[in-house]
Image (tube, rainbow, N blue to C red; front, side, top):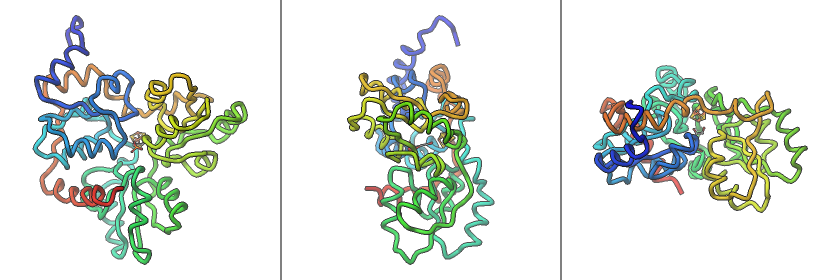
Length: 311
Ligand code: 13P
Ligand code: SF4
């Protein structure tokens, strides 16, 4: 990249030239969140991707999110600034092993968290996100057996709140597993009036210390509605950028890892995207998401089911 160019101005020029929409997740770098046309959680971003009139979707998030955009909007060009931006939950659920797990439990409905590959979605009955999982489970008849993949912590949390016994795939998110129970207890003691808001990808010992559990958008809503002046946030800390923008007078503290600070809890996959890579993606329309049509069509069904069942 020519060092003399103004990257932000170029992104702006290219987004108009290409008729592109820039979608970003709350875990992206603040500079990317600020330049995006829309920032949201996985469910909001899926809905936006399905509804957009743009020719190009520049997806600033991780690969499974950009794949969802392509599955729902196949006629659009979907670019991801860095194709290596994966997800540890996706990595913990290889498609062939998941297909074998399903075959071993043919009487179970396969409910899958959106954080998985298109190939795993293709083997799924209904997709859920952390925003709609509880509401979707409550619509499934009680006698229907359920298997849930790939996040065992989200699965265990959903089992607890709905009372449904689900067969859990043993996957997890490396970011949300890094919070330290001991350090969080110390932080709470130092801020006794500060509520803790946590993402359900956290293990149960962290969720047990939380006052509110929800998706990134639910955590943001809580942060703006809570009367507390200080709030402890147990999810990827880049979300604090949105909180601070909306509530400049409140204090948001990222929940700590074992080293006592929140920097070790950044998502290394989300961090692979940058403004420079976004500029190149809009300039070259590469790297592009491409999916085999048979996989896309199979993965579309459980995603449509999710959108139908989502409140
Ligand atoms: P949300 O759907 O809550 O934004 O979660 C996405 C994610 O990857 C959390 O780690
Ligand atoms: Fe995947 Fe965890 Fe990163 Fe979310 S925070 S994208 S679940 S690795």
